[in-house]
Image (cartoon, rainbow over all chains, first blue to last red; front, top):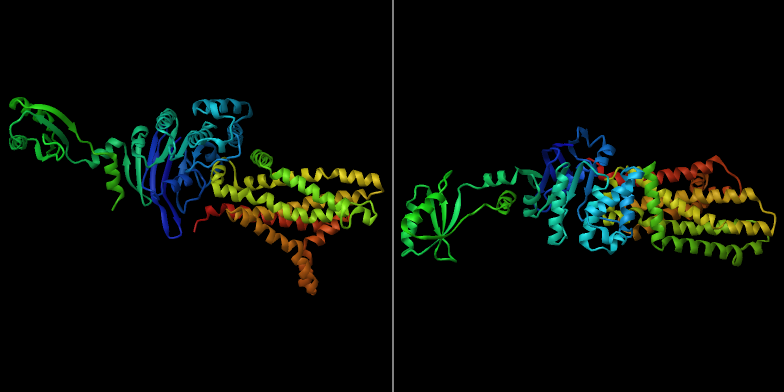
Length: 310
Length: 241
C-alpha cells in the first residue's frame, strides 16, 4: 500500500503549516518524519488520516485520493494521534472492542484480534483496568493497540514513544520494525536516535517544507565533507614532531590539538581521501604507540540542526 | 448504520459508567412523581385521572436536564482530543452526531418508560384518556429530540462543558418561554410567527391528544436544524479558505 503526496498545502489563516510538500512512501517502508516543533509534521499526518482537508494539493493512498475516498482510506489506516487521546473511563478491553467494531472488524474475528493486540503490546496485566488508571507507558501501548487492531496496511504514528521508559522504547521500536516489514509505516518524532534505529528513510521538514529526504547514511554523506579521525599517540618525545609528521602525510589536510588530552590529535583528511592507513604506518615507522583512532561521524543531530536553523 | 450503533452503544454505556444517568433518572422520576402526586396542582387536587400534571412538569425538567446530558458529548471529546481518534476511524461526521443523538434519546426513553407505573396507577384510580397519555409520551420524545439536537449543537461549538450547557439552556429558553411571551405582545404575522416558534404551542396540543402534522414538522425541523448545525461545526476543520 503506497502513499503519494502531491504539492500538499495547509494554511491556517495566513500561516502555511504545510507548504507545498510532495513525497512518496512505498509498501514495507518505515518513514521517519523529523522536524522541530511546529514544522508541520502533525498537520501532514492529520491530512493523510483524513481528519482535515488540505488547503491545496492532493494525496493518494493506494491510488485513492484523500479528497474523495475517505471512508475506504480510513479503514486501511491505523493512526496514533499526538498526545494519545483515549476514553479514560473505559476499560482497556472494552475500548479495544469498540475500536475494532468501529473499524468494521468481523464479529467472529474481534476476540482474536483483541487477544493478539493485548499480547503484542504487552497489555495482559492491565487489560481489565480502566484506561484512566494506567500509567502513561501503558496508555501509549493501548494507543498503539487501537491503531493496529484492524490490521491496517498503513500505520501513522505521531510520536509513538513519548512517555515510555527506555525498556519500553526499545520494545516499541522492535515492534514497529517488525510491523514495518509488511506494512507501510510513517512515524514522527524529534528523538533522533529513534529515527536512526527504526526508519528506512528519513524526511526532515522545517517550516512546512521538506529540507531533506533520504536514508540516514545518505543524509550523513551529504552533510559530511571530509573524514575526520581522533588519534591518540603515546611514547613520543615532542608534540611538535608528531604534528609535523602527521601534517607531512599526503592524505592529511589539517591537524588539531585536543584540549582535554595532551596526547590526542584531530586529523582531518583531504577531500575524498582516507588518512587512517597512513597514520598507522607512520606510527609503526616512528615507533609510537597508537592507543586510539576513532573516526568522528557527523551526528544526525548536527545535520538536523544545520537543516532546520537559519 | 453499524458505525452509528457502535457509537451509540458506547455513549449509552458511558452514561452508566459515570453517575450521570443514575442521577438523571432518579431526579427526573423524583421531581416528576413529587409534582404529579404530592404537591402543587397534583392529580388529587385536579381530581381527574390524567397525566397532564406529569407532562407539564416533565416539560421543564427535560428542558433543564437534556443540556446536562449533551454538554459533554462533543465538547469533552474535543477538549481531550478523542474526537480526532474517532473521526479518523471509518466513520463520517454524520454518523458520530447521529450516534450520540440516539444514545441520548435512548436514555431519555428509558427514563420515560420508567414513568409508566404512574400511568398504570392513574389508570387504576379512574377512567383515563389513553390516547392523550400516549400522545403525551410521543410529544415528550419529540420535544427531547429537539432539545438534544440543540444541546449537541451547543456542545459542538465549544470545548468547555459549562459553556456548552449554558448555551444550550440559552437557546432552549427561547423555545420554552421567550417566543411564547413575545408572541403575546405582538400581533399580526410576526405574532403568529413567534407563536408558531414557541414550543408550548405545539407540545400542548400534542399532549392533549391532538397530533397535527404541523407540530410534528415543527419538532423535526428543530431537530434536523440542530443536528445539521452540529455537523457543520464539527466539519468546519475541513473548510478550505
